[in-house]
Structure formats: structure tokens, C-alpha cells
Amino acid sequence: MEEEFNAGRSRGSSKRTLQITPLDEEDQEEVQIDDSGDVDSYDDDDDEEEEDEDKEPVGLGVLEKPENSWSLLRELFPSKAGGTPAWLDPINLPTGRSCLCDICGEPLQFMLQVYAPLTEKDSTFHRTLFLFMCTSMTCLLKDQHEQWKRNQDKQSRSVKVFCCQLPRDNSFYSSEPPRNNGKDKPSSPGAVLCGWCGTWKGDKVCGGCRRVHYCSEKHQTVHWKSGHKQRCLPSSISQDASEPSNNKTLREVQEVASKSLWPEYEIAITDECEDKVSDDNGQVNSLISSSRVDESIEALIDSFEGGDDKKSWASFQERISRTPEQVLRYYRDAGAKPLWPTSSGQPSKADIPKCTYCGGRRAFEFQVLPQILYYFGVENDVHSLDWATIAVYTCESSCDGHVAYKEEFVWVQIASQSSTTQR
Image (cartoon, rainbow, N blue to C red):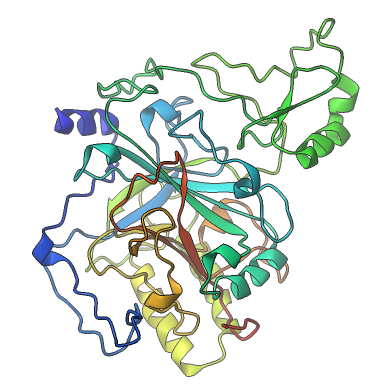
């Protein structure tokens, strides 16, 4: 039945659904601990390279426009980028400071989500990772200082990732596989969301019309100034259909007032081919040309200052050039490591904090490449948002955590490390 469910989630599409198989105990990487109790570096040069032909290939995420208006609804368990999140648990969303950039206090913007169920236990039958970040490059540069702090409680981050997981039998979705025909429905409605960003829970309401909800006073203020002031009428007389209420039926997609969200795409997962070299045409369904990708990547190398960085970048670029349209690399396997663009700015094992909820080790799961910024239409100038790679680390045992959305750990490597201080 589980195989039937997974087939149903990807029926009618050539895209592969991320499905992780359990690892045997003997395949787990042995962790060496020194006398001080610290584990060795994730990326020590003297680590032996393990060659295992049985390992799962790296999953490459490329962006495509959704085939249908309903393709990215939450009841279809999508992997997607831009727009608004398709929350897995639609009720118990992150709240409070979890939704905000810890540096500037602005609500974080949704970047992408990856549907990555694990088969080794029932509680992870459905599992999605959600990545958010502040759109300010100034905050990202300050974030660089914060991520080196060994005490996670004292870190102020502008990039955050959350993990949500559900068993097969839950109150939000049918235990049967989706039909993918536009008629699938969730079992219950979700929380009322912010009328401006459509991302976070709208626990505040407009005092005038009592119809539009907000996640923060900042979003209420910007919506008021952008036009809600002219349309806000007391709820008893308001009949303005151009500004719908946040009260949704099961099938409605909430309209969002903000025009600054990143454009929405579906993430299609394909296996990396070790021998593949991309031709001039790029991949089928590519949304940008490979020449544009190559040009954007080459621009980053100008900021590298050391020979080691340039050597690492050459190796990184050679690997990426096989599928230049990739924006995401997924590889949740024992001993998996990110494909680092530069030799500087890489974390040691001690820099990756243990799981806040169970105290266990966190392991690398996926990374996001800067090519995604060009799909999002981000300008390529000195003040624009930019990075070399974003690496996401999650609880190795994927513990339940007793919260709907567990915050995991993100490591951001920017193109030049010369402007950051590690400790």
C-alpha cells in the first residue's frame, strides 16, 4: 500500500518523488571523537573517500512552471519554490520570533520547500522541509557572524529552516494516495493566513473591515499604505469582491496582496548522472538558458581571493555544469556532504549544533545554489541578495520533537569570506 501511495503522488508526471530508504546500521559512518569530546570536522582533508556503488544518487532540483493551477496545493505534497508555502500541517504553523529575521525583525520570505518522506518509521510518512530567508543582503552578511557561534540559543539568524512530519493516518489528509486530477481535497481547512504575505498565520485582524488578517503590524502597515486604506470598510457594509476575506474553503487559494513574493515554480527532482555533460540546449523544460547560468556563476569567482578558493570553485563549477539549471542538490545519506563552492567558510562538525529537541546529531540533507536567484528575478548588483551555497542540516534520526515545525540548522557560505569573522 505504501508503494501505491508513493506512485499516486507522482502519477501523471515524469518527476521523481524524493523517497529515502532506511540505511543499514553497518552502513552508518563511524564518528570519531577526540579526548576533548568534540567530533572531527565534517570536511577534514584527511577523511577517506568512501566509494559505495549502492548509495543513492544525488537528487537535482530544477525549476518548472506548474502544469496545472492545483499542482502545488498542499494535499498533493509538492516540492516548490517561490510564492507561498504549501504548509504540511496547515494549523500549527511557526509563530512569534520564529517567523522573523532575528537581525532586522521583518517577517521572513518563503524560498522553497522539499517533500522528503522517510520510510523507516511511521511518524515520517509525510515529511517536508521549509526554507525561509530575509531578503536583505545586509542581514545575510550579519548572519555570517552569527552562524559561527557555537551556542545556538545566542544565534541571530536571517535564514531559517523548519521540518514538519506526519504519520500516514492524520487529521489533515486522506490515508489514500492523491489522484492528481484536480479533485483531491485536504481533510480539513488550514489556519487563516496573513493577507499581505500569505505565508504566516494571520493572528491579527484589520480593525476597520475585520476581514483581512495579518501576521505582523509591519505587514498590516504596508498593506494599508499600498491600497487597503481606500478599500477598508466596516465588515457590516463591505462587499468589495476585489479584496476577499481570508476565510477559505478547502479548495480556495488565498489571494495575496504583496507583489514582492518570489515567482512560484515546481521543483522537479532528477538523478545526477556522473558522466553527463550539458549541451547548449540545457535540460528539457529549462526556464533559462545555460549561457545565462554560466554567466551568472562566473561573476562570483571575481570575489575569490585565495588559490584554494579558486581551485574549489573550478571543481564545483565542473560538477554543476553537467546540469547547469539545477538549483537544489538533495543527498540524505550516511556521511553525505555539501558540494562546497569554496574552501573557506566551511563548518566543522563542532559548528553544526546538535538537535535542539532530542540532543542527537544533525546531518547534511540538501543545499540550495545561487542560480535560484535568477529564476526569482533578483538583480545581480553589489547590494543584492547573493550567496555561494546554502546547506541545510537536519536531525539525523528525524525525531518527533513534540512540535509541529522543528527548526533545524542552516549554514550559508557566501562568495567571499574576507568580510566575515569566524569566531
